[in-house]
Image 1 (tube, helix red, strand yellow):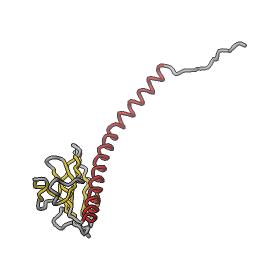
Image 2 (cartoon, rainbow, N blue to C red):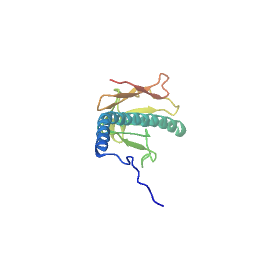
Image 3 (tube, rainbow, N blue to C red):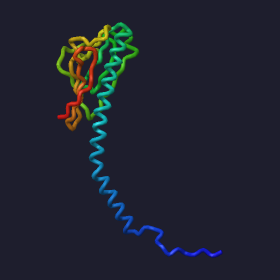
Length: 168
């Protein structure tokens, strides 16, 4: 049995391959800046959601343990965390601390500072009754380096916080 050679084209020419590669490079160069903005926005959004989840965890801990809890913010160290207001001598074993992404700034509206870990810091104080103390900041603002802002705003009933979008 003899195989007949085919007479039609079976491969792409070099010109066609170069043209396709040039189109791909052009599309990627247009899409890359948009994707970087998308990922920066995701960082801001995920940090705001983590902070909101921490407010819920603080509230639940305050109610379940019957002790005031502090969600503190240290803007100089780019950290924030959660611990008992008056931890035991050996510290709060369930204390949490998070490092803020370098591209974000976390600030609170001015309130009276609270002593946390030997520092004078802004803190949201959750009472054992499940409400936010009236001396707590009503707003925590997360700002990205490109000017986008998300705020954690205290609800009117002072029970918890919610995320609000404030694009500048």
